[in-house]
Image 1 (cartoon, rainbow, N blue to C red):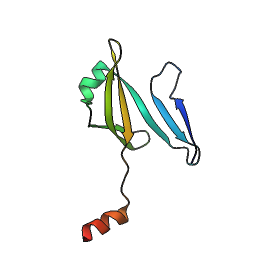
Image 2 (image 1 turned 180 degrees about the horizontal axis):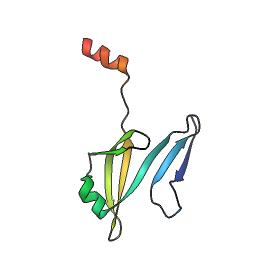
Image 3 (image 1 turned 135 degrees about the vertical axis):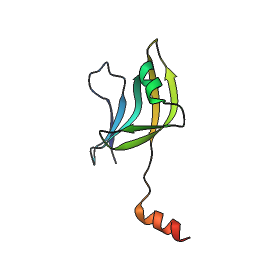
Length: 92
């Protein structure tokens, strides 16, 4: 599987992502939020971030405050379990 690293939107945007060349799916690594967004969204390490555009949930692994009004969320995607694996686990 080949992936391509890039930025979302204009080059001054801070969101970083990977794009899978096989399925064209975008996976974020770093998401930029303002201090206000941080208060409203209650983002914290160990919490979750939901990307509504691609229907993906992420675990927040690190929060880094940069500058007066910006925070960077370092995220990892949550991997969904297969439906068959869930049924097998319920039987055990």
